[in-house]
Image (tube, rainbow, N blue to C red):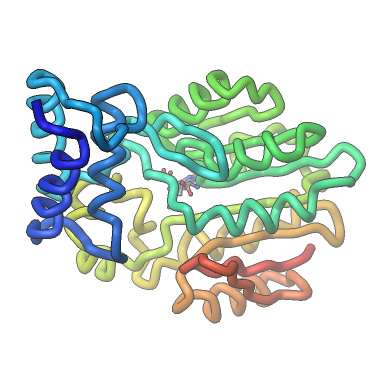
Length: 285
Ligand SMILES: C[S@@+](CC[C@H](N)C(=O)[O-])C[C@H]1O[C@@H](n2cnc3c(N)ncnc32)[C@H](O)[C@@H]1O
């Protein structure tokens, strides 16, 4: 039986050689291989532990899926986000670490407020909503998404994590929220589908081939369709002086800032986290 370390080294080489896998930074292939082996073994592998024939067969089946481009989250069904272990699955966007910066921005605008209310639009499997609900137990948190599959996974995550202050509803942007929240929300967050309908075709197979198209683009020419609706409606839901936070890629932050200003939001600016590749554009009602 081979040692776990030898299995991981060979797996790393397989992933490095694959054209279907993105190579964003050193160590990513090793990390993915470790995640998959841990999933098979039911625990983090110890380098010297021996891997049984059966476990090795299963590991190689899953590794082949990864080598064909399938994201690790869809293979293991799990993703870590802001210290939470989330259930993920096909038909729903996989949370990205880059969204943790928006979570931190939301938390500092909610903590210490009386009866804080947070709304996370386009919530997916609920990473932002759940991380805020965990960090600010006094907050009432609502997550909303247009599609059934992400909402079902978000509800499952809330239940598994015991976060009874987070509630998930299904519908278009603000539409499914209780009307009583109008004018009473402290922070609205959104990590929207913001690619234009043509631009989405340029994404790597690893994303376009596996993640739901509706989580990547709103099918408008510039990808601003959903965002301009959010900017237009946010003031109806926010308390006066409270915040809309939008996560986008750096090349979008200028256009999104302009959209927020056009919608009448104040103190609009763009912020960047230490390690984050995205920007959070903030505006105040
Ligand atoms: C980029 S993903 C972000 C998901 C989650 N916030 C995250 O960061 O992991 C965008 C999400 O927008 C949802 N979505 C697309 N159109 C929507 C709409 N009109 N109203 C609400 N959600 C929508 C998609 O289902 C998808 O879950």
